Image (cartoon, rainbow, N blue to C red; front, side, top):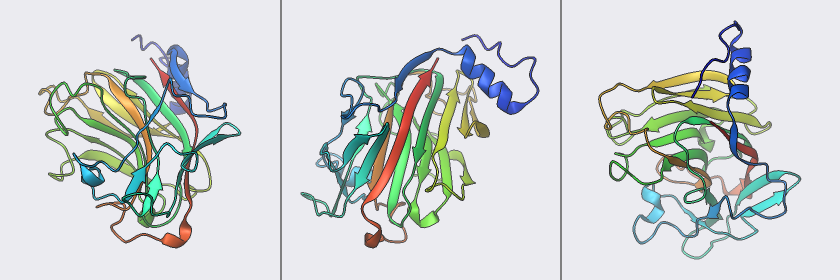
Length: 262
């Protein structure tokens, strides 16, 4: 990838815009239709059982493909979590993945989104490897472009997990930012990923860099294609750490667009 952009610019914001212009838009969803584009997304259905009940985090939602949980209107995708005791779980929600339909190695991935408020909410924009080239989690890596837990309102997290660096060991690498209006306004969450590093951005301002140590896949499994995930979990080891505010349902995670540049 040519990185000639921004060499003559001094303002960081202008540098970022110039880089984006040098790249080619290779994948996008503007959510302008009335239904989810199933050529780009798959709606996961289930609660993780029997292989990984609660998705390894003791989450309390059952993911569905129902219109009650996934809807499009006025150019916005809305993932809605409901306290409706759906099937095996007290809550229902949605998890959308591009696996088998969109996967990328390197580039810029950006998502314009607004997260819900309220204890128990755990919205995330994240990526997992398409093939698990180095083994199961965390050996093949995870990129969390954005996570927000409702009990810690306004504190947004961007993180990577690898065999060397992960939350089980307490060695995960990332950073967080306080966003006062995170549930009132849409914000742009993005990564710029090369063979040398992953930069994390909020509203086009870089706030964290994870660098390739050069020590192999235990530290850096990020040389393979990853796919994108959008989901709204309820409860769980982290999201439910301070309980769940049932009076705030329905909870809505809204996405304006997803764009990938290379």
